[in-house]
Image (cartoon, rainbow, N blue to C red; front, top):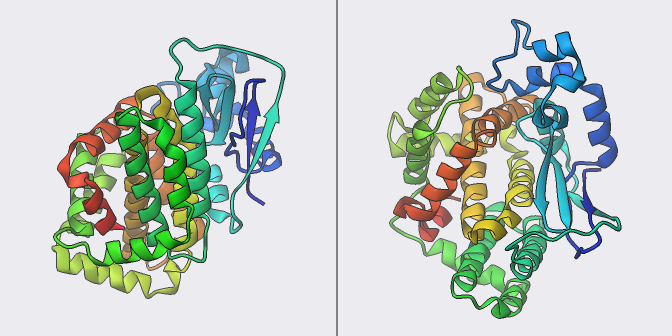
Length: 355
């Protein structure tokens, strides 16, 4: 069973942590000696030897390592009175666990008696973001609905929430959550998606590829891989792209795409959405989750196109390639969110059309 666990300080609400099964996670981290971690991460470290092992660890032991190396593949998000631990998708073994779980992700909370105060921390906004995230998880994990509809609803929810953050009317969020918690929303969004014209997934993917080219490459193999992706996805035009998508989703290899999409969305939303408390931009965080997920979807499709297969291991490899290029660079993550927030190519209707 896939679970998330959260360690909370005394001042806590019903926040939830995404750590994929505490027991599995701890076993995974124990199984990886720190010496092996750089091999699965393939980070851009100067201390890797020809065998992709860490010379610092080999020569000087674990005390020589920085906090990032000691923690990996665990990731921590810090808030006032709360720590959220997760596994990194950039780790190949963690990616296989994340995508390989067929059950809905569950959430665990642990409290202690410690207290702390952050200067200028908007705790009221944070609680509203947590409430929103709970509702987002509920929608994303409603498997009675088409995955495209689920993604549309959580994207629109983040859009509407952002307006209330911007206008400083957070007292209106409870009514907003009640609206999105109603089953009547499903029919509305079905009509909304059916009525979108003038936008296409092809154009959004083209804009994403342009954005990826502006980012700092972390792995020396990434630029070549990225360029091959662009040729395969966009080189023959929009009609060929749509034909490839049609052919892919008719193949048995694509049967797991709904499950993998759900788990990717839960992963990205859990890891980053509540970080909107620091820049008041939860909509940008949700856009990044949507764009990252649809990009990984198309990377999986390209793998199938080239190799004729898409196993769990192959899908995890694709996801971890993307993650290590984006998530391990603050500059790349910042550029992603800033561009998605600013550029018209990524407006709401365009992203809805791309789902």
